Structure formats: structure tokens, C-alpha cells
Image (cartoon, rainbow, N blue to C red; front, side, top):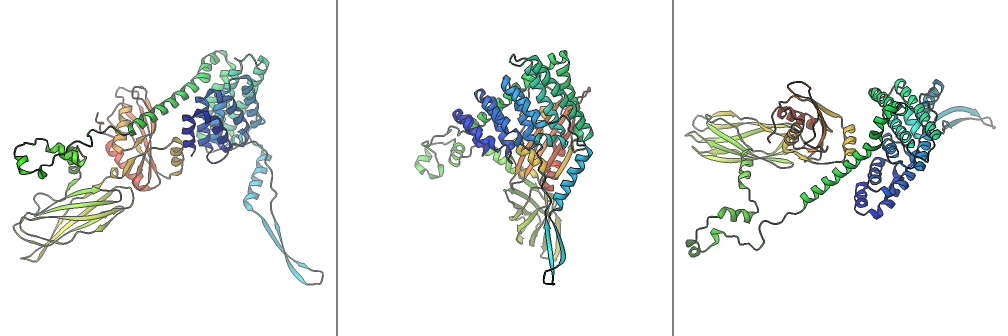
Length: 566
């Protein structure tokens, strides 16, 4: 719904202001991430709306409890607060949300917090005791007591930092640094006020680094990156030389890169719209189609039609017969050897939920084969629905046997079996073992697309992961990515330009199976700095089921060594 509203706001700018203000009331809900992404795009594309959006965003800052939404909000405030009034208001509101520049809980506060949490988990208490009533009889009295609800008035931003959100701390440091650097260029802000803002920002950043080094959290691996980022921000505020180098990057290139990103998305949507537009018909509806079989003998005798194939293609609506034959031949599997008494081959047709087998059986002996049967078995999530019937084959005779197999999940499977027949003269049974038919996972994978937010949420949710080390003879990063995309029949969600040169590439790939299962792939590859220039890295696959993760990993391991076809 939010994406649809976003599209409407882009197409009809006159309604963008009213729409964005209504949606910002939902920043504290579960869909807050999609709302803030929408707000970020609108504030970049419509500069006249920035002042009102920033004012509304500052008013909603204390209601946001999600760390990711808070990070995007702070980035917007740091990039687009360019006037003295909005800048000062944003700096004061952020510091109000941060509170005292100490984000490490003291022992007493920590114990009180742990006690309150334990009481909340324990729930209400019931105490039962015997009492004597006024008439001298006994009765049972039950006392029901609930723990006192302690009102916590701590702002959400401070709660997140105290809980050990290291990444949010680095975003806070970057935002305060941008505001302080921009305050020094505004004539409406006095140098004394700018110095006070700088000192306050430095105190907050020092407290964030102390929190990151002391607090034990799940983001422990990000402490080094946070410390390095905060150190750079402190140097930008204290060292004039560093300030001159970093200031143009921090205050200008962020918005420029984001504007380029939005432009690339818009160009991609336009190209996709043009691609989906109906193409002009190559054959007009009133063109004549000649059927030689329907012509009279007199007419056909005086004409020589050399274009029967073209007329047939026009009549059937299929003009690429050669590729159809090539596709069919690629699905023909030889089941027995040429020296076997019975030759068998199978033509496999893969539909969405079932597999159809057409097995051609040829009797190469001079004898009649009685009760000939093809016994099939499967391995994987496949079930034989229609088993082949017994046949009797005469000398040098042939027949086609059909079988149907139902598929219930996306994973690699095998079909194997045996031909059993009797010799009528000796009444002896003979067996011929057939070659396996390997059902590839690529028959069920379809390229699909999704937003970055949906991809990240599925990546965090899915429990099955398969990690494949990169080992390939390809030395070009973009060429290797295109080879993996083509070989796995997946869609690359990360925009990339083949003209860009670098030593590292990271991309997200996404596909959906015919059964509705999601397949996520993250490719991280770098080019070694040596004479050979080999590629190294990992390809990580995640899915909700084990079968698709293992099968897709086997497929990538098999195809990654080859060079892509250009």
C-alpha cells in the first residue's frame, strides 16, 4: 500500500504534501521502515516540502522505537536541515532525546531495571490463607496482587543507545557532526552558539564510544567500526585541516549519491515499463494464410509454394521452430545402452507441479518380449502418480510408455528404474537397469524481484543457510556476477554498472520457485591483489527450506568454475 501511495505521489506532485504528512503518523507502527523510506525519497525530490516535513519529523522523533527507522530519521535531519531555525531545532531535539551524555547504566540502575523486568515476567501473585469469620467459622481467603507498573519516561533514542545499539551511536555521531559543520557556515548562528554545539556533540560522541567499549551486546563486532567513525567525526570538529578535507564530503556527497540512486531507480522503472509495453504486431490480422492441404487440386497444380514453413508459423503463432526442437532435445535422456536387448530413452516435460515422462522402448531382439514393464522409483520430494502399464513387444517393435510424477517441493531429485520382461520360450525373467534422470532445480526456479526491506527481513527470518566458497577461473567481477545470475536463473536486485572498476563487488540475488518458496543469495567477491588476479569470497544462500538451499548451493558449486558465455 505504501509503495502504491509513493508511486501516486511521484506522478501527482500536488498531493505529495498531504499524503506524506498523513503517512508520517505511522512512523511508530510496524510499517515505519517503508514510511520513512518514502519520506526520504519525497524530501529529496520535492525541495519546497522540506521545511514542513522536517518540522513534522522532529515532532515524531520521540515516538519512534525502531532502531532502523531512527537511523534513517537522523540521516534525513543531518542532510536536509540547512536553515538556522531547522538546524538549531534539530540539534536541541536530538540532545533532548539523548539526555545526559552518559549511556552506561550504573550498578543501582542496572539492578533496578533487572528487578523490574523479573517482576514483569513473574506476573501477578496469588496468596491463599485460612481466616476465622465473625461467627466462628473458617473460610479461605485468596489475595491477588499485581506488581506495580513503573512508568519509564526515558526517551526512545536514549533507550536504544543504553541497550548497546552501536550502529545507531555512529549514526548519531555523524548527524551531530553534520549539524555542527553546517552551523559554522550560517551567519544567523553566532560563533559562540556554534562552539557550544560542537562541545555538546563531542561530549555525546565520547559517551557513545565508552558505551560501545563497555556494554556487552550482539553488535560487539561493530565496536571497531563505530570507534573509527566517531574518531573521524571528532577530528572533523577539532582539526581545521581534517575539517577542510572532510566537510565537502559529509555535507555534499551524501545527498548527491542519494539523488543518483533515485534517478537510477526511476530510469530502471521506465525501461521496465517500455519492455512490458505491447510490441507492434509483425503480422497484420488481414494477411492471408495459405494452407496447401485446403487448396483445390487445380489451383495447387499451377503454383509452387516455397513458403509453407512461414505460413505454418504464422498460423500457429510460433516462428522459432528451431529453438523449440533444440529445447526438446535437451530434455531427452538415454536410459539404456545401445548394446542392450531393449533400448529405452525418455522425453521429460517439466510442468509446475508434475513431471511427464514419455519413454520410448525398442525391442532389438528377434524374439517377442512378454510382460515387459518399466518399474520406476524416485528420490526426493517426488511421487509417482501414474505407473507405466505392462506391454508385449514383437521382434524389432517399439512402443511409447507414459508415466506421471508429482513434485511437492523445490529440490534436486532423481528418477531411476528397471526394465523387466519375460522370454516366452524359456519363461525366464530379464532385468535391465536404467540410467538415472537427474531433475535439476533450475526447472523450478523463476527470477523475481522484491524491495531491499523485504529482502533484509526475509534474510533475517530464514534459518537455512548454505555458504559456498568462490573458486573460479573468471577474473572479472561483473563477468562473474553475470555468469552466476545466468546459471542460477535469478534476478540481481543490486544495481551495478559494468563500466565501473573496483576490487570488490557485493550483490543480492532473488528468485521464487513455482511452489512459492523464496531463494535469497548474497554474493560478496573481491579481486586479489596479485599477479594472477583471482577472485575470492563467498556466496551465501538462504531459504526457508533445507532442500532449496542445498540444491542451489550444489548448482552454484558446479557452474561457478566455467567462464560465462559472452
